[in-house]
Length: 266
Ligand SMILES: *[C@@H]1O[C@H](CO)[C@@H](O)[C@H](O)[C@H]1NC(C)=O
Ligand SMILES: *[C@@H]1O[C@H](CO)[C@@H](O)[C@H](O)[C@H]1NC(C)=O
Ligand SMILES: *[C@@H]1O[C@H](CO)[C@@H](O)[C@H](O)[C@H]1NC(C)=O
Ligand SMILES: CC(=O)N[C@H]1CO[C@H](CO)[C@@H](O)[C@@H]1O
Image (cartoon, rainbow, N blue to C red; front, side):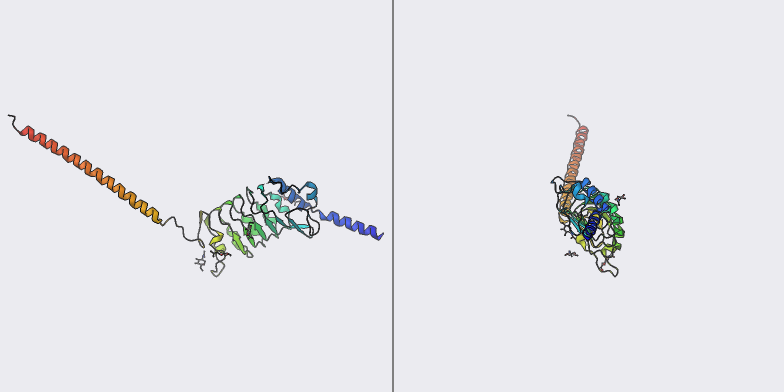
């Protein structure tokens, strides 16, 4: 009898293991990724049905705790495609690291539902569009690393309100506009993130980036302009002299003509 009860408890635990949210999250992620190297080939429907077993997972890149996924680390997996908005179903996620892939499309604003998210590393991909301001709702975020992507638009001001943020890197994107003051300095004027977090964005400006260099001319440009205008003025004055000579020549010829007309013909 006792062995039977024990068996039933085990069975119930076994059923509790497969979390429908985590399952939906992973199968949708897999569907939206392109996986030319087959790195997610073992993410079969069967394996995805129970991604976690206590603290262990049979799925590479997945780390579990209490039967829930808390870490998804698919670094350098040769993944293309996009990040499914169903990522929001992985509600226990604390670390999302998809760095060093070829993932394109936008960063899904649905990440805002991941209230436990502490580390977001999407660096070295091909992500485009704007950085979603909704990330500011993930109050536990302490790492946002988006360096080397194709993100554009402004850096959302709201991200400056993430008090736990200790690492922030949006370098080498296509961001524009002013750097939010709260990301540049903490209150009291103490620098928060330095220029290396922001560099490599052509139209981004403001402290801590150095003032734009394109307004002050480089030495080479000055030399070229000097030589150019020198040459131009040479050409202009040479032409002027030629015209003057021609005009005076004609004048003299005309004068000569008049003189010869005035002279009596013998
Ligand atoms: C994010 O990932 C990149 C590439 O894998 C790594 O070099 C970088 O250190 C990571 N960022 C943080 C803040 O850990
Ligand atoms: C941040 O602080 C530095 C030095 O304390 C100051 O030069 C700079 O203007 C401040 N930047 C902003 C955006 O407030
Ligand atoms: C910027 O800050 C990072 C860490 O916060 C540090 O590793 C790096 O050396 C700093 N770079 C400069 C140019 O001060
Ligand atoms: C079961 C569940 O939570 N499903 C959600 C998964 O994510 C999508 C997109 O954010 C939601 O629409 C679903 O409700």
